[in-house]
Length: 232
Image 1 (cartoon, rainbow, N blue to C red):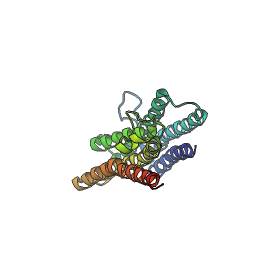
Image 2: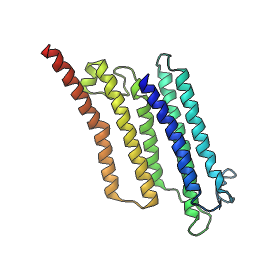
Image 3: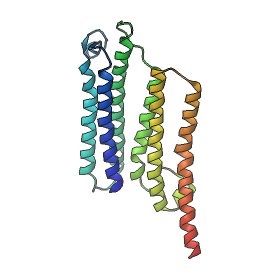
Image 4: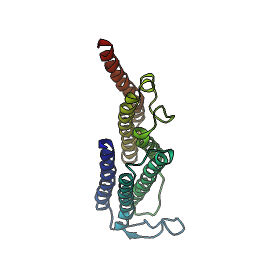
């Protein structure tokens, strides 16, 4: 129950924070921007910068809807369908947020020369999509069945269901942190410029916290639990 409340709060915080950050970015731009991409998918219409808020508002509504859905289905048995729905919510919200920040990028690209055009930040988009995928996987770790294919599987977690539960909750947190690292890199590369060292450090850090940290955590719990049992 407590784990579910933490996740609900996290979902709402992400939606609200995204809206606040977009609002801050909006006021640093020109009052009119080439943001109308809904007709022929061409950036050729000047509209109010306030249009930037449409997508983060939609993302926040989706976050609120996800929380209400989670509360409504909290007492129901966890099924494959429920895990898929949880992951899909995360993916959809992540894609909507990414789309919003691509439009923010349109505004920043437009300001220096006031020429209508848009270059897709390919690396940043790839990193952001990878972050969304990792976050969606993390979202279902705490509710996965014991010994499920998708879950943190090690000798220790497979040997004891209670260790499986706590280790997978911990892995969900580390996966989420790794997703945030990728988002930070995506923003940094777009705003400052690409840096091989930062990319390599980010990848190494993510591997450590997604694989090695949960492994050590599960091993430590296993050793403490069964050492105490042997001592008794």
